[in-house]
Image (tube, rainbow over all chains, first blue to last red; front, side):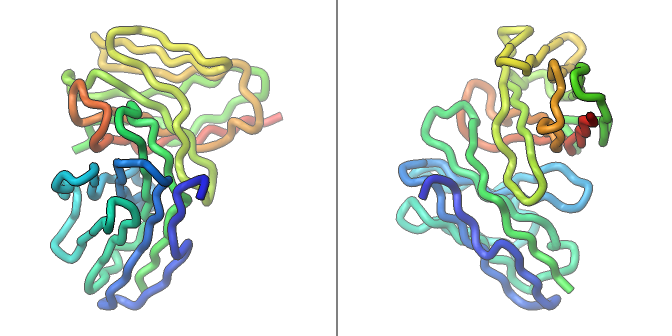
Length: 114
Length: 115
């Protein structure tokens, strides 16, 4: 596709359930990022994948959060045992090598934990 | 620990006037800065950037100014248009000299341009 695609666009889940959020980056983009934006907050870094290198997981807030990127393309962010504080818009972005941070973001997944 | 700060959550400007959005940072090692623009229900889009070797970068109606001694940058939009109404985020990369990696974002400023 022409842009970064995220699914679902909205997700309402009950506290304690697991959720999976999907990101399809732009074809050929080697770098993929996950950020989240909670209400009234800036974008918070979660995880970064670059090619075949080990991902930078330094932003994951707890061990309930994990992400993988299969075949250097699609990425899935998994949140286990969701809590109300996990409610946020989860944004995925991709960029080609050497892009000077000109990320292309997807439209995000709005997660609501009730 | 906010390394990039946008202290004004909102700004309202009349169409045709100048909009000035401000950003401060705490880490003197930052050497590159970016502005992103976000409309509701969309992801942020890259707007303009500046390297620390410059103090100004201009792209059409948008100009970013960098004052390294004050650890301050600003985005000027002249003339402002109603379509500029959006949330503007300031950001800086964590890795000096790199072109990839995490960005530190400010909390954003909601710009409203009224006719």
